[in-house]
Image 1 (cartoon, rainbow, N blue to C red):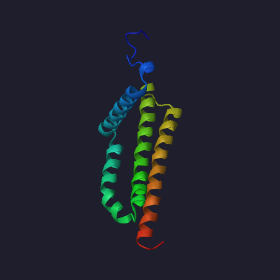
Image 2 (cartoon, rainbow, N blue to C red):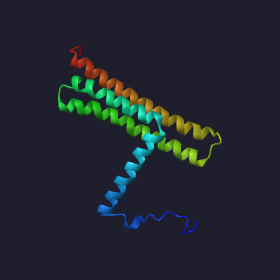
Image 3 (cartoon, one colour):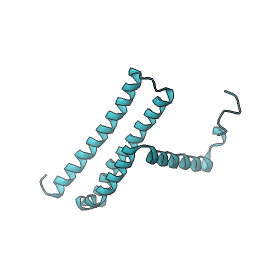
Length: 133
């Protein structure tokens, strides 16, 4: 790859405040791209917004509320990682390959497990709020 076609991003000078600014910019770009391109990401954000009011009611303390929201944010983290795996696989090529399919299936399974974690935490917190536990 020639010098003209390589990225002009200089990692050597990416330190201190410049690194923080660049990291923030790249993170924002990733979140915007995920929101625009990934319907599951948008659906999960809507779900989190819908869960905020019942989460306020279920939580018996600010720590409880943070826990409820943290497990929801965990789903977004796993969804972003899953999308990153899928993007990398798709960058390699569109031709079906069993190992590529396996990598995508692993990512999907990770999202499912994170959703199960959310369900378990919310259920236990709800049952505790209702004095069933």
